[in-house]
Length: 423
View (cartoon, rainbow, N blue to C red):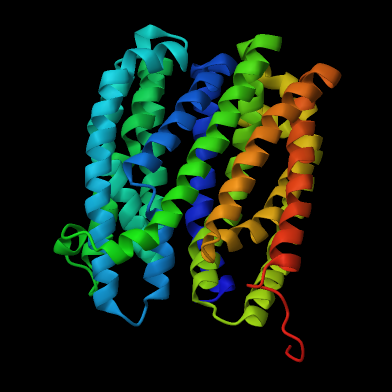
């Protein structure tokens, strides 16, 4: 399936996701306020880390090797059994760990010991959350775009209904409960979609762990673990630093700004994951890989630039529609944040090559280094320029990352280096 066709089907899911996210943003702005946004951000970062470990951090590898082994169904099934068994074991261990650590997590991360019971909800749904992520990886690797879209649309509506209702009735506590169980509920939709395919049987998810596939997935485990730890921890650190300097409301303003970026960039990031990552895994020829990268640039970067500029020009209206008057101080972040988003996506088109081609060491080093540099630059620039400095740091960090990716992927890497005498 081409990038254009994938973008079309993905566009349906993203349109629904964006619409539901916009409605949900408004609900949360009314019922939890700026400081509540900051706590939600802390919790979502933690959930992201936990889910990565609960899936054994194998999902990116499952996408790659499912796509790569498209002509070897027996190997695909051994891969899925290995990943499924690892996921079940890892999610059960993670659930027990969450229950035991719930008081510590509530106190140190959410800054409210009364929220400890939230983690019981998360632990209860963790196996289903992990299996949902694995099944989505299978659909992605098999290029079952329509079924993948249906699951994503279901997730959007379930997220809106459950989170909106619980936020209305129980405020911040209800919101955190909803965020703990939403993806567990989506599992049943995703399983129904996968079960209807001709290539899937339930027994393919559990079985003997194949050592060869486990070793192959190992590099992706390291990459996913680095990504799951580095980026969320840097965001938690930045959020805590903003709260220490300006108060939790300002941490919430930044989180609201980050949420806007996440919503409108979803179309690009999901399309890259759904089409681009499996495509990178399939390509054998360096010249063809380079053409795929540059072709993706021609479509993705202009689209993100136009949307980012529109959001900047309409920033006051965006705040009024998506949030409330209490969020007005976030207006100063828009210019730097939107510019940073364009550079971010430009760099991600290249950094996805590290995932698709299994460049484990390079991915881990750059992921850790630039997560640390974001935290450091945010701490420095907020002290030099005030609250606006956190968005300046976003642009500065991704500008340096973009240059690094361009050099490492397009100049130095033998995966994409042009071969003399060939197109």
